[in-house]
Image 1 (cartoon, rainbow, N blue to C red):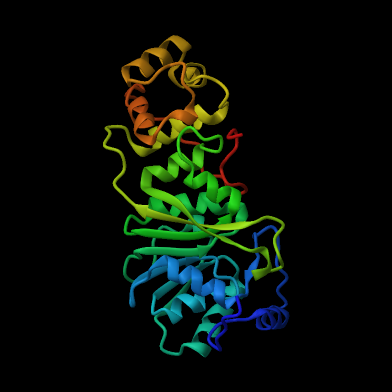
Image 2 (spheres, rainbow, N blue to C red; image 1 turned 60 degrees about the vertical axis):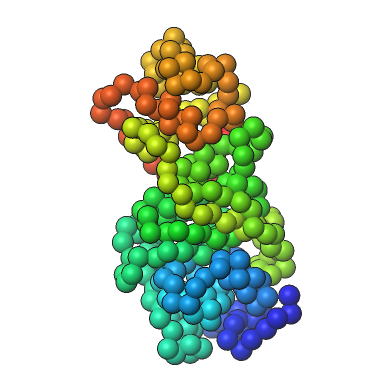
Length: 303
């Protein structure tokens, strides 16, 4: 990890820049600043970007990964929640890549519904640990132009996103991500490439967009079934979905109509089966789906 370039930020530059700005990384925003050029280029290489491709980055921070993406020729839009960092990132990019096609949006990524310029086809980001899954799912939902995603997240979260049915860690993030894309773990990132070093391991997860399941049920209704199925994952689906369908008898009838064993548990089902179950819900105005939480990886009840 000794690959360096004047174009990228090293450990001393990261600390100097943070010091001049008076920035102290906070757990509230999940800030751990990447400072290793070799790791940055590894991420960019795995992302497989094409020169001129429109890319969105969430949480650029001081700009380590941002500079790597610009260096690779990306047309980049970065979403940054911190006003001070948003102002500085533009200056950092201009100083090192004066001709870069780059702009920054000052916003919480969970609030962004539109982006300037051409629709992005790739998302590449070091996501804050505390909101990684909500941000990932929100971006996939709102920006259908995204064909590929490569995000760095907590290793445990990467494993959950990429988990397959039948595994102990397969749950809400796994199924909801599968609605939009295929997912696989794409590498491990050491702790010593961050400042400050996190207390957990990091990993890359790569997602490739695919068509959602063919179903008459809207996504919101399918996700409501998923939430209910994993709310108490040790229960059978008949028991777990009884509240959603009004009774255990009604839940069992719906499951059988969907071709699903009422005695099965949520961790054994693929997303297409959840969609078939959702088709059995009464065709009435759907209650609101529980909003995406901003303070966790949306894995409550997923133990």
